[in-house]
Length: 135
Image 1 (cartoon, rainbow, N blue to C red):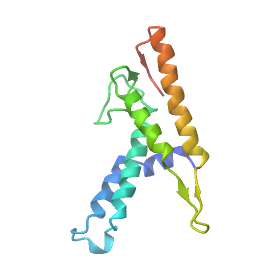
Image 2: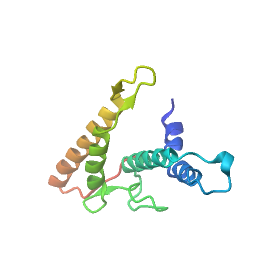
Image 3: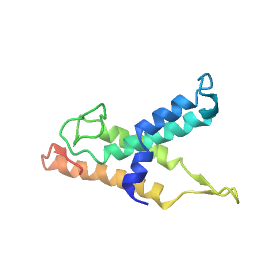
Image 4: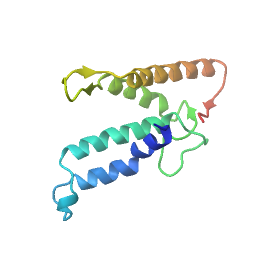
């Protein structure tokens, strides 16, 4: 699967529509999602922020995407990455057939990537580099 397609699905726009359709009092009854749709929307928003946090190619945020910019000591990336690592450590998939819980390599690798990014920033800061563009 192409990453660009996954990023489109794991987007703030898709999450917002899912949240809207999961509200039971909408007049679009045949199109409504059940309440779990809002939980899925929260996961999509989380991954959208995660993608943004490692793809910032401008010095300052644009279009309300506060983490889609260069990383600096005041950008909020490191705090988000620490929180994200905790969320990722608690995520798992459930095999529909066997009901077995599993942690796929992608989640483990996200945790590693974020820890590595934080370590890289420490090294850059020691060398008086004040920001890092990530694309």
